[in-house]
Length: 269
Length: 274
Image (cartoon, rainbow over the protein chains, first blue to last red):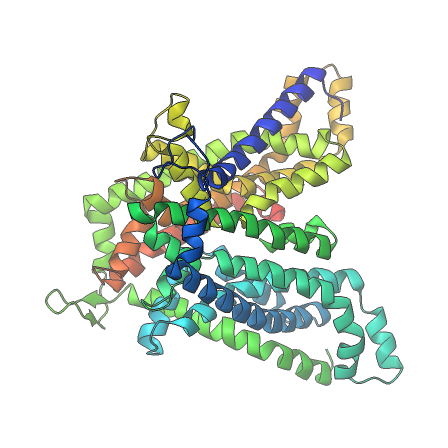
C-alpha cells in the first residue's frame, strides 16, 4: 500500500516503539534478577549471580516447580485425548448442535477466569465434596487446555481433508486402523503443537488456579503470588519470574515451527 | 448421517461432553443458582432458600455500585489505550511490512501472550516502583489507578493487535489506491476509508480487553495499591468472608455486561473478526 512517506515513517516509528514497550518490562525482570540491590534500584549498581544461587537452593520454589510440571503434564495429556476426540467429531461429522459444541469448548477460556474459578471451586467443594488439591488443579487446567488442542487438531484436520482417510477405508481398513495408520501420523505435529501450547497455558495459569488449589499444593505461579509481597523473598521471586520469561519463549517458538504457520497460533488463544 | 457414523460421532463426543458439558456447564449453572441463595448472618452457612438479597445489595449498597462503575471506567480506558497503540502497529504489520518482517512481528507480538500473566504484572510492579526505571526517568505514577491502567493495557495489547491486524490484512489495497487517485491525502484516506473498514476489528479486540479487565483481580493487587476492582470483591468474598452467594451474584455482573456488549457489537459485524 502506498500512502505517503510520512505515514510510513510514522508507522515504522510507532511499531518500533510498541515493540520496545512490549519487551522492556520483560527485559527489566531479567536484568533485575542480577541486580545487586535487593530493592531493585534502577539503574543497577552492580550485577551478581547471588540471587540465582539462592533461588536454586530455595526448596519452596523447587517443590512448586515440580508440582507445576506434573500438573501441566497431566492436564496436557487429558486435553490431548479429549481435544482430539472433540475435534475429530466436529470436523469429520456434521450433526445438529455442532456450533453449540464448538462454543462450549471455547467457553472455559472465553469466560472471565474468575467466573470459571469460582464455579469450579464451588462445584469441587460443595457438589462433589472433594478436597482442593492436586487433582482439582489438574481438572481445572485440563478444562481450558482442551481448547488449545481442539483448535490445532481442527485446523489440521480441515487442512488435510478426508481423501486419505476415505482411500484407507476403500482399501478395507477399519476405523481404528485408519486412525492409527493414516490420521494419527498426519495429526502428530498438530498434537505436539497443541500439547506444547497447552503445557505453557497450564504452567503459567494463576487466575483459575488460585480457586482450585488447596493450601497444601502450590504451583509455581501460586508460589510466586504468595511470596510476591514478602520483602525477603523478593529477589528469589524475581529470579523465578526471569526464568519463566526465558522458558515460555521456548515452547511457543517450537509450537510455531511445528504447526507450520501463525494461523493456528492466533486461533489457539 | 448414517447410523454407524452417528454412533461413532457419539462415542467420540461422549467423554469430552461429559467433562465439558456436564461437569463444567453444571458447575456454572450451580454457581448461578447459588447467587440466589442467602447466607445466614450468624452461622455464616449458606441457606438454600431463594432470595434476591444479593442482587439487591449489588445495586443499593454504594460501595459496590462505585466499584462496578469504577471497573467499567478502567475497562474503557484500557480499551482506548490499547486501540490507540494497537492500530498503528497493526497497520504497519498488515500493509507496510515486508512478508519476512511481518512474520517476525506477528511472532514478536504473540510471544508475550504466552509469558506468564503473573510475570508481566510483576514486571510492571518493578517498573512502577519508587526506585524503578520510570521513576528514574522522572515519572512516578506509583501503584494505583494510572499504574493499573498501564499494566492492564500492556497485558491485553496483543489481544487488540491481532484482530485489527487480521482485519486490516483483509482490506483491499484497491480501495486505498482509489481513494488516493481521487485526490485524498494520506490522513484523509485513513480517516474516511481505513479506520471505518477496520472498525469491526477494533471492536472485536475491545471485547477481549473489556472482558479481561472486568474479571481481573490479580493485577489489581499487584500494581493497584489500595485500589479495588470488581474482581477483588469477588475474590475477597470467596476467601475470608466465605460469602459464596454474594460472590456468585457479583460475578454475574461481568458476564451480563459482556453478554450485553456482545449483543450490542453483533450489529457492527465485529463477531466475524474473532
